[in-house]
Image (cartoon, rainbow, N blue to C red; front, side):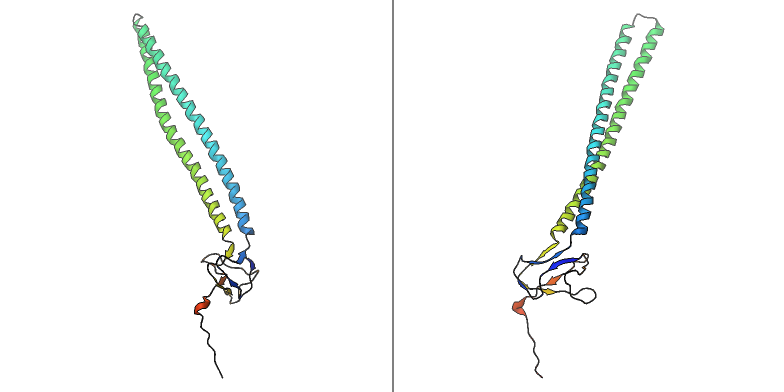
Length: 195
């Protein structure tokens, strides 16, 4: 990250005073990309929610219709008591088929419910992950403006190549990058030599 502005070395600062700011342009680009991804994930979540709701409603309606079909077949069997044995047998078979179809639909509903729960969990996990990453980036963006944690005199730290950090210098963000230090002036020792 590039140091955008930094106050002059030797400046006395109080707690909370501005010390330096880092260039947020690359982070702003990543934040915009993450916002777009989050919008896409939220839209996908809503679409999944609508799809699963519609699918479950259709399955429940199908189940209700199959229950009515079983009731109808039971009535037909009941009314065919005085019919020929072949007709009674046909109605018994039709009732058994209707019951089997109803039971299969119930099992299918249970499976689809589990599938839809898994789909919703996956979609919500993606939204949650992108939201957390965006929140973390926004927190880092706040830290691009560096303020004094306590009173002191600003002393520039040195880069990896031994040169002091100044405007335009690049600092590594990993490992807790330091831009400046604030030595405690109340305990500073001055050593002088006379020749």
